[in-house]
Length: 98
Image 1 (spheres, one colour):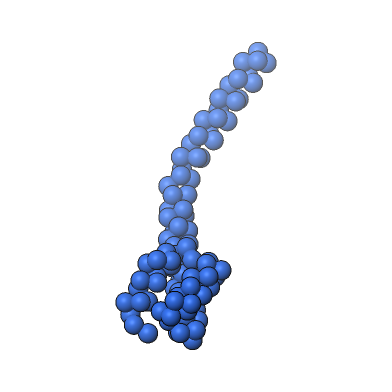
Image 2 (cartoon, rainbow, N blue to C red; image 1 turned 90 degrees about the horizontal axis):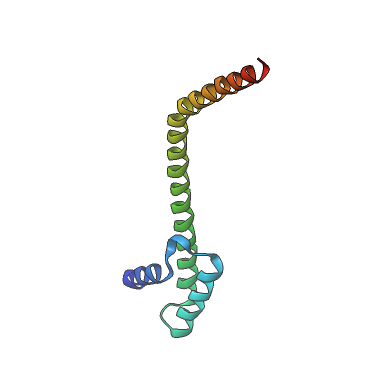
């Protein structure tokens, strides 16, 4: 299949957010218009879905890594805030009891 058709199909469908139903619908239109054969279209949908899965997995890994970095940075801050809150809570209780 012509690479230009593949690229146009990918661009038109927004491969990153492509669902199987959307891909199949778009495929039926391309087959109907005679742009691709059924066999080529089915192979294209499998490839696009595999690419979308790969991109999603990469994005998930990036997000998880970044969240973990931010959690590490936040841990000391949360600890300080907790300690201050405990001290202030003790102070309030002591002032109420005296």
